Length: 140
Image: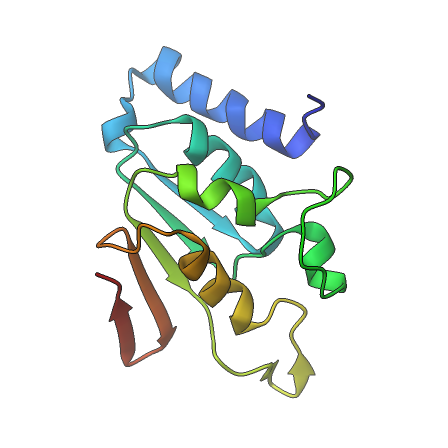
């Protein structure tokens, strides 16, 4: 499997925390925003004892940002839609519902966050979604 440089960078940071600072998975919270949600979920799917994951405007996959495809292709990058079921820790997703912010269209729409939650057949206390300053949804 070919890993992107970004994923390798996330892996290197984790190894540094673990080996140089003695950090344990149970004390680590991973954060990823937009495209950064890809390497974040890739690492989270491989670390079963993380404290939590925070995803800010996550993508379903690289290809799904640009095109409304319904399946994952081999050449797609950051296949979050396929990796989210393998994340064992609590996941906080932050995403605005509006498709525009300050008059600019968003590339990653709210539907990406909702789909990441719905794709996981084990909708439990694993997910919380913040869609505005006053709205938090827990999925049980």
